Structures are given as C-alpha cells and as structure tokens.
Image (cartoon, rainbow, N blue to C red):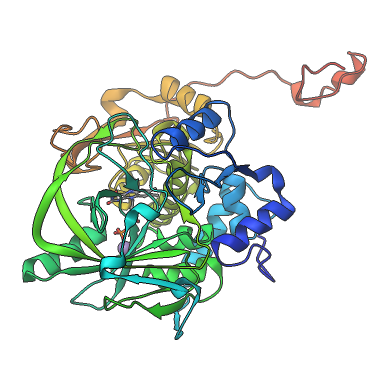
Length: 475
Ligand SMILES: Cc1cc2nc3c(=O)[nH]c(=O)nc-3n(C[C@H](O)[C@H](O)[C@H](O)COP(=O)(O)O)c2cc1C
Ligand SMILES: [Mn+2]
C-alpha cells in the first residue's frame, strides 16, 4: 500500500490538475477551440471514448461562458489511483486502500473564509447561464448539472449527507433534482417535505477526485460523508458557512450553488440519458431555488459524462468496496469481489470464494444483494477463477451451473429506478428481480483435464528463441 506523505496531488481540483499536467501529462487533454455546450462537449467525449481515450479533458472555451469546463476526471482507473496518492497497484490494492481510509474518517474544521467565497452572487445576481452547463444526449430534456455534490443536513439527527444528484436547468435561478428512492438524500428531503419546510442543499462543483471518492462513499445514514471525504483525501475538510442557507461548504471547492428545495412544488424532469445506456423516464420532481452562487475568482466548472466511463467507474469502485465488506462478514472464505465493467459497474458482481462447505456461495450472493440495492446479478465462483476476466467467469457459469439447483431469484426486490428491466421502466419503478448464481464446482464435479509434467517443460529447449508468455511466444 502506498500512502501519501506530502500529498503531491494536492487536495483540491486545480492542484490535482497541475499535478497531472506536470507529472502525468498523458492523462490530460486541453481543448482550446470553442466548443458548443449542447452536444459539442459530449460529442467530443463520446468520440474519444470510442477511440479508447479516457483522459481528463479541459475545455478552455465553451460557447456562452467565460468559465472553463473540466470533464471526464473519473474515467480512468489510473487517475483514481493517483488521486489516492498510489503510484502503483491494481484494482484489488486500490479497494483495500480506499476501504481503509473510508473506515478512518476525519472531522472537518470550520474556517471564516476561503477561496470559494472570492466571488459571491446573491438573489437577483444569480444567473446559471454564466456556467458552461451542457446538454449531453439527444433526447435529454435540457441542460444538466451532472457532477454537483449535493450537501444536505438531516433535520432530525443533524448529520450531513452528500451525494451527486442530477439537476436539470429550469431557469436562471431554478434547478430540478432527481433523488433516487435508494439515496439517503431522498429520505432527508422527505423529512423537510413532511414538515412543509424548504430543504437547504448546497451543490458543490469542482473538487479533487479523492474528495469525490470519499463523498460518494456507500455508507450508513449515520455516517457523515464530509468526514469520510476528509479521511479518503487524508486531510480534514475546511468548511466555510454558506451566505444564504444554514450549511457550511468546503472552502477549497471551485463553485457552490446555495439552494433550497421548495416544499410541495413539482415539475416535469427528464428524460435524461442514464447509466444503463437508456433514458431515465420523465417524472414530476422537486424544484430548487438557487439563492446564491459563490466561486473562486477564476473558477473551474466540473461535470461528469453520465452513462459513460467517467460516471460508471467512479460509482462502481465505491460500490465494490461496500459489497466486499458485507460479503466478507457473511462468507469468510471470500478472496476477491469485482463489480464488472460489463454490468455497467452496477448490475453485475463477481465474487470469488475458497469454498469449504456447502451453502457458502449462496450466502455470499445474498450478502452482495444486501450490500447494494442496485445489484441484480451476483455470480459466485471458485477462487482459482480470475474474476478480472469476464471470459473465465462465463466459463464457470457455462460449466458449473445447473440452473434448477444453483440459481435463485428474489422477485419484487429494491433495485435501481433506472433499471430498464424493472417492473415498470417507463414509470421509473425501482422494483426488480435479482438473480444469484452459484458457479462454484460442486462436490460431484468431474475431474478436470490436465497434462502431467507440462509446468516443468522449458520450451526454449525445444523452440529456438522462445520468449515466454505474451506476444506470439516466438521471437
Ligand atoms: C455522476 C453521478 C451521477 C449521479 N446521479 C444521481 C442522481 O441523479 N440521483 C441519485 O439519486 N443518485 C445519483 N448518483 C448516485 C449517488 O450520488 C450515490 O449513490 C450517492 O452515494 C448517494 O448518496 P446518499 O445515499 O448519501 O444520498 C450519481 C452518481 C454519480 C457518480
Ligand atoms: Mn449518505
């Protein structure tokens, strides 16, 4: 494990970007030509992704705004690893480091002033049009803020909560919000709603990827994601009090929108292109009034390319950490857990176990479902199966599963309201059917083929210039 000593990547967005530009320039792409916020930004990101490029992209000039746009920050695993200050390590090492930091939260400290208050615009001075907010997919209902970290406080417990919730732009000082039934943010908002009171929410835009990783931690309602973000970036978050709402926000953010969710008001929101690769359906969703915009003198606006690597990888890595912790409690012989890219980092999870007794595999699958409501397929394999390989997992399913014995289903379970195969995808139902698959070898599994002595053969003795694995094996 590689711990940060002097935090070369800094603790805010701009310091991480300069760290990348100075030390890992291959990670950054600057586009200076003017780009259209409507499909222009997403068009370039989409083409880059299709060509296998996952750099963070700085759009220096987005039409209609004087503020640069930082996009695609979380689309590449190596960047997320660098964000934790890890010079090397695979996904398994990254998850171990992330989980350790998640379990060591740091309380924030309050400061009087900070860069995020260099410019303060209140009331009539608020104009969202100043920001380079984009339209991404063809049928999207409008422009969307896609990487705002929504900070709220539970009115009963006083505990702060953070999540990213998408915000459709309704007007110069009005936004929509989609609070999934599965999000804590939804429960908190409902508490204000039941009292008929406005729900204060500060939308934090532009921060260090380690802050994002901590703020999005998959943790119980009682956990405060501000503390976890401090733990994950290994430095306490400095908070400055908002000017118009009773919340305090990270002093080193780029931009903050101080908002209130108006009680009882609803407006049509979406369709919006979402992570399953389909549009989330239109719903009657709450409306936010933006009471103030505060930002740095030369702010950076950050977005996330929803439904693409940027969004999928960030959310997926965090989910794997939560699933692994829960599965380990339920099944001590677990050797590895992976949320697969093939399942949009949400729907499909592979679990490798060193099976000792019957029933362990199903126990592990059930634990995975308990940990993550979005998960729909949990596949459990033996520990000699490399779960980094979808091919090896499919081989285990193909050869070791007898469906009537090894598959179980959980109908009417809580899943993602964006699941295109839910009980009512058009209506945005979050009820789904989950499937657990025990693809481990059973006790009656026949002997597997092997060639005696193969491991001891030195191929160079037989083949001139043999160079071993990789390439075509012959120089
Ligand atoms: C780019 C991105 C966009 C997201 N959009 C939404 C959204 O619109 N609504 C939502 O409820 N969750 C969304 N999520 C997931 C939540 O942010 C995530 O589950 C978070 O941990 C929820 O926090 P909470 O349970 O504390 O409210 C998004 C995540 C990412 C990374
Ligand atoms: Mn939470």
